[in-house]
Length: 204
Image (cartoon, rainbow, N blue to C red; front, side, top):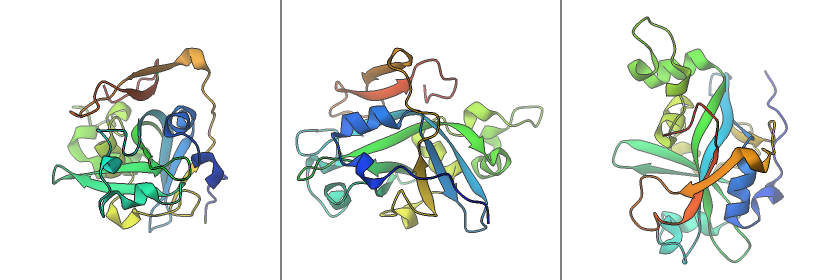
């Protein structure tokens, strides 16, 4: 069976969530499918979500769904949204608080054919060719392309099913831009979205 690259240590996630979000840029998210096939890509966009001080976060109110954001860092938080999509997050926070980083966009690296098959017609151009930019340029696209669903909620990000590795990171500061969030109402004004500015694979 093909080996995955070495994972980031769990201690990487035990910091302020914005610091973790910044440092995840340039890291690689890997998914080993039940078939053994490995798919994944480089993180080029993510958003930081805190705890009770962040009105845009699920952890703003402690509920059964958000409880995982208060738990140990370094685990996947996968939730269902709008009745149709999954979103994948890395639980990240300082002990005694809560938080998670939403993975918003990847530069595809492995199993592009499989990703395109799982994404469907949206990932194929009129000539029948794969559109790489359409594979993982958004949080719901990522989970569809990598076959991530609620069954992976609570999975360690150092494991064999789901893993984040150092990749080519860290991305130099001049190549990183911090913006307000996308697609939220509460807390939309916070500078919590981190992007590799010149990437062709951003969500917008």
